[in-house]
Length: 243
Image (cartoon, rainbow, N blue to C red; front, side):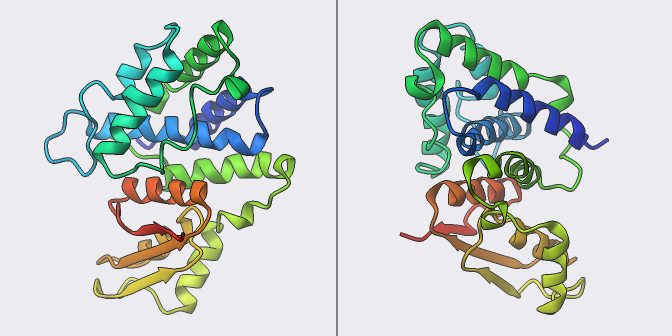
């Protein structure tokens, strides 16, 4: 049984509630999506030999849970969890953009400890067990990103269209360029402004035999999201940041 989007969205909303007050709404996603990513790869790949992504020993979501209540929780999340995963999977500059030890955004002392502990606890929800399942629609980060942008883009003064192409539009574009169930695996689709990568993923889904996808994005944070999204869909090298 697939994980219900309602459960995913409920958890995202609770996470944003924990982050309110110390940062702009547009920055919620930088923290929430990284936690979602770590939860997902930990459930799917931790301890799995020759997995598509490496979850180093001591750097899984369970290890993050063990940090709850510790005075050094912010620094430990940065260095012992996110830093190790980034280094092991060539994701430096991708999943380590958000600083979980930033007192300006997360508060200092006991305030930070409480906020981060509560944030981690939200993702302990048994309904968010990705061990055997993926979310409905099979695009966890894309769905989560669209949800966050839909609710907070207005507050941040940005349009979600800058980052996310709706699934319906993506499917129409796939048909326009001639991608369908019979498209050959040798076919390559390129998106020079790929945003979160949702368009590329939806276009690839139209081919039953698979195809190659690649994209570029000049916004570092958005490119990071796209790379995380591609990792979850077995296309870890499909997106590059334009510098």
